[in-house]
Length: 375
Image: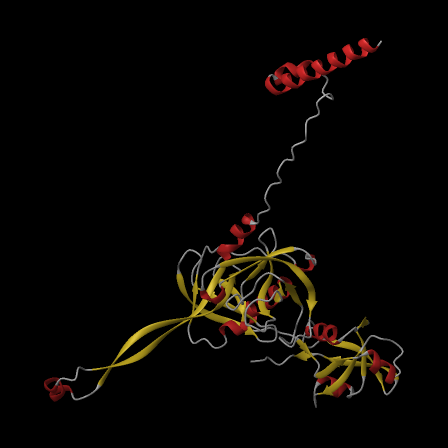
């Protein structure tokens, strides 16, 4: 019996050795073995690299550089030659030197030459020029500005331009990937990538009407007025401001939503300025502590901090200290809600405002007037 087991062990060892040699030197001889005998390791297929080249390629031609070009005079004396001085005296001539200053960026919004940018980009410029993606440099005129949203519209005299495609800023969400396109520091057109960090940022003290998209896509000086686009290359915002202690990008940038920018742009093109409703009051938000001290029955509403004498609200009987609760039966949640709702009304329109006046619910009728144009 012992000899039998010894013979079996030796035979098994020899057979395994033969199989090992076959698998190393003649792998094709293993085809008669079941597939489960020698399992194969699965090889992972490499994932396709993520690229936003199509979005960038679509949007880049629509973004321009806005710069100021000035002719400066540099005095140059006639050579100090006694013979020449006898005829000309000691006087000065002037030579003209063209100097350019990078102001920011802009976005082509129509094929016939309208460009959207920030108001602060062009407010101090004497002469404005625009550098297109194809290398052309054209003089631009200011169609109109809106300091309260920091937007401006320029016009260049040419046609067949690559206009940007607008997307609705109401459809964007926190976490969406975005691209910021502009000309930072005048180094040339640049594309940066990030995500939408927050929506409806307000009370930043930048503009009167604030509803910013916040992004961590790098926005630096010179990017102002440039495009914030989605991954399809469509415009969702106009890059406007950054929060920075160094002057460079620190991951907190703000863009004016495309819906707000489009509305302002249309009014500037049509009227040269933006027409907004106005009733002549200054308001502030009500804090929880203020609500308790005023014994307010609800949390919504805004406090009237000031009333313009002989303005629409003053004529209707609204006084400082009143609490505005509703406008045309629409609840007012905060001061921004009221400001936007009144601004969206048509001058001459009659509205109903519900207030708490000395603790009593009061209804007043007010005729809306046009908001004074800011310069």
